[in-house]
Amino acid sequence: MKFESNSASTTATPPLRANKPEPAPTFSPDPKKPRPRALTGKTYNIETPAGKAFITINENGGEQPFEAFINTAKAGSETAAVSEAIGRLISYILRMVSPIKQTDRLREVVRQLIGIGGGRSLGMGPNRMRSLPDGIGQVLDMYLLEKAGAMPVMEDKSSSPAEKTNGNGNGGHTIEAEIANAKMKIGDLCPECGEAAVVNEEGCRKCYACGFSEC
Image 1 (tube, rainbow, N blue to C red):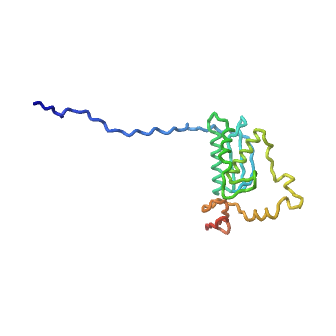
Image 2: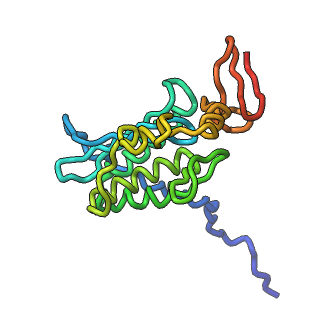
Image 3: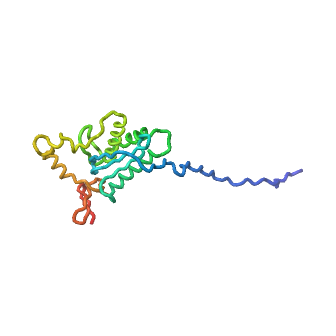
């Protein structure tokens, strides 16, 4: 009887290697359009639930929005940091190399910002401002409407004769409005409740919304 041997040489199979993940797509070294030496633009001044805000929109040579700067409160506060961050992101979106027109990009930014609510709002009805981002979105929307000729250029309301007086010699302010303004102290963002109600008093920081204090 013949017996076949199983000692035939076999080819060793290499160990299976895990598939390497494909590298994520990266941007070009500088995906932003270079900033010209000088730009023209306009600055809007509005009251928001986080305090007064100055929103500047600069345009390029083609009269397209090119960058935005947002300043609120004093430098070094949390509110100022949030405002600067929103302005930087808007500017980055406008300056990116893309076939989409800057006005169309800004219109999408408006769609994302308008309607964001916070813990405090200003105004009533169509003039209601729900938060700082909502106020920024409203100003950007106003800017786009002005460019399209859909509304007149916004003027400083504080200089309008209708607001200087309401017939009773008190400059258009009512007692109820004065009481409401006295109760609402606008300051920095509170780390406990998130309201813009932290003010510096007697060497301490106090939140008028939740009572948080820091000395």
